Length: 245
Length: 347
Image (cartoon, rainbow over all chains, first blue to last red; front, side, top):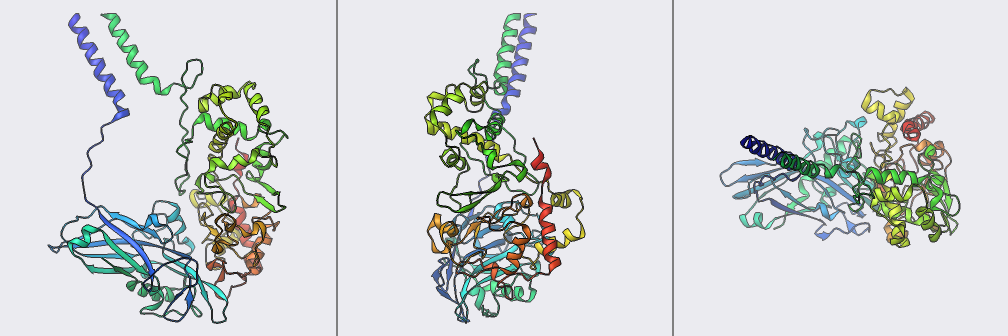
C-alpha cells in the first residue's frame, strides 16, 4: 500500500509539473547565422538628400525637391567564391524619410566568401499580388489598386519642381506592374572587407530622371498608370543604386 | 499518507489556477483579464501602448466612463460630442481662438500612429486629457474624487481594471490619466470593418452598378482617391495639403502649427473615409456640408500653393479632376458604401 502511494504521488507530480510547464517553455537555441548588414543612404548628384526644399537639378534643368521616396528592395542575390549563387527570400521596404528603414539585415544567406551582390527595386511577380505582403502601414500605403491590376507600388518618388512658367508644381514618379520591375538595380563585385563591414548601398535620386531616359518634368511629371513612362522610369532604375564601400 | 496526497493535490491546483483568478479587493488579488482585440482581415496590427494593455476590465470601465457625465461639471460626457450614431463624432466645436474644428470620429483609432487633424497628440492615452479642461468637461477635481469614491460601482471597477483601492492615494493628474487609460482602452475597441464595401470585398456581398462605377473612379487615376485613402483603413495616416487653401492663417496652418516647418504649411492628417456619410461636415474646419460639395471641391476647387501634395497636380487636372456629373454621383454613391451600420448600432 505504501509503495503504491509513493508511485501515485510521484505520478501526480510528473503530470502536474508537465501541465504547469507550459508557462515557461525552454526556447530552443537559435541557429547562429551572421547577417549581412546593409546601410542605405540617399543622395542627389552626390549631395545629401534634404527634403522639401527646391534645391536640386536634374539633367533636363528642372529644379526640384523631394517630398517622398519609398521603394522595395528585393531579390537579393549573392555569389560565393565557389561560384554558387544564393538568393534571399527577404524583401525590404525602404522609405528615405524614415531612417529606421535604412538599415536592414539579410539573415538567410551565408556571409563568408561573397564575391558579388545583386538586388532588384520592386517586387517579383510572386510577391506583387494584392494582399501578398503582411498588412503593415507601409505595405498598405504601397498597395496598387486591384482596379489597376493589383499588387504594390515598386517606387513612389514625389516632390515639387519649378516649372518653366516659374510656378511650383508637383511630380509623382510612381512605378509598378511586373514588366517594370527594376532587375539587377545594382550588380557589384565585392571584397570580403566590404561585406564584413556592412554594405553601403546608395541611391542617387537624380538618376531616376536622367539616365538613360531624360525626364523633363515640364513635360512628364506623373507616371502612374502610364505604361510607356513607367517603362522608361524602370530603365533609369538600373542606374540609381551603387555600393559605396 | 492519504492526507499528504490530498494536500499535495490542493497545493498544485492552487499553483496552476492562480493565473485565472479574477480581481477581487477582498482577497487582495488584482489580476485583470487580457482583452483579445480582433484585428479585421487585411488590417495592420494595432498600436497598443505598452503601459496600457487592453483588459476586459479596463475596456468595460472605459465604456461606462465614455458616456457618464460623472467626469464633468456641466453634464457632458465623451459621448456628448462623440455620438455613436455619427460614428462617434459630431459636427464641430469652436476653439478658444474662434476657429471651427470638425470633430474626428472615434473609429479605428487603434491603427493610427497620431491623432487630431494636425497630429498634436502622439499617444492616444493623452488625447482625452484635454477634455477635463473648462471648455469641455470643466471638471472640478474635488467633485470628481468625491463622486467616484462614493459611487456604488466605480470603486470596484477601478480596482478590477487598475488595482486602485483608494482614489485619494492618487493625485488629480494620476486620476485623470487613469480615467484616460480606461477611455482609450475602450476607444481602441471601436473598430469598423463591416461596411457594405467590406461585405462586397470579403463576403460576396453586392454593390449596385453606380457604386461599382464609383469604386472605379475612386481606385483609378480618374479620381485618384486611393493614394491617400487606400483599403482597408481608407487613410494613409500621413499629412497632406489637399489644395483647400492657398493662404494659411490660424488653424488652417495645420501640421505647421506643430512642427513649425514651412513645408508642413496647410497639411492635415488624412481622415479615414469609413462612415464618412455619417460624419458631416467635412474637412478639418467643416467647410463642406455634403459629400457632393467635397467631390465638387476635388473636381474643380483645388487651389495651388507651395506645399500642395504632388498627387494633386496631375497634368491636365491641376485645378481638379474634371469628372462628369455621373462620375461625381457614382463617387458619392461609392463613399456611402463605407457606412458600417453594425458599428453604429452595436451595444
